[in-house]
Amino acid sequence: MASNVVKITERQLQILKRLYNSGKSVKVHTIILTQNELSDGLGITRQALSNHLRKLRDIDFIRTGRGFIDLTNKALEALGESVTESFVFIKIDPERRIEAYDKIKALRAQRLFRVTGEIDLIAQVGRAKLDSFLKDLSGIGGVKQTSAHVILETIME
View 1 (cartoon, rainbow, N blue to C red):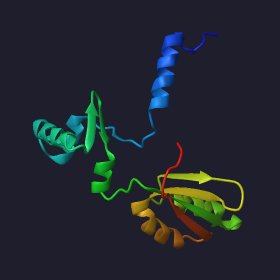
View 2 (cartoon, one colour):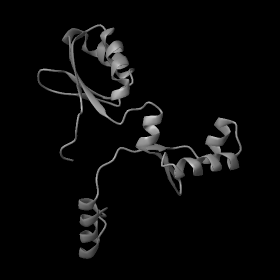
View 3 (cartoon, rainbow, N blue to C red):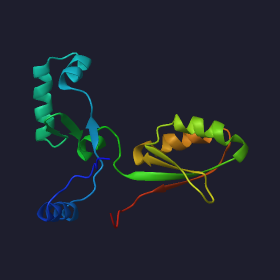
View 4 (cartoon, rainbow, N blue to C red):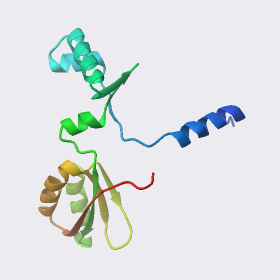
């Protein structure tokens, strides 16, 4: 059986560790469309799109490279997509759990976690969407209790 482990040198391992320890985790919103697909969808030429992308890059709304476009936090804020996270703890009636899960999955949470303990689900929601998420959640049968928590500060990553 062949091993899938890639061999690297001790120096390469040192470099990776230094990069890792010198870096920080970031949330990235990456576009998976080609520039041709984007320009077609917007009804503009590829050249016009390229000009707009260059201007957006110059004002730090996007990062671009070969084969990728990433939206920056500035862009997300301009779109009303808060970079501040919030978590909603959700308690669900056990008899209506499957039905409630299906409806909650249709809401605009970034991530949903099924957990053990006093609550059943944790929904990760951008702060800008928290109010509408809670309103929609309150209309779902079987949701017994919610508790929302907004991140004030990250003290360790």
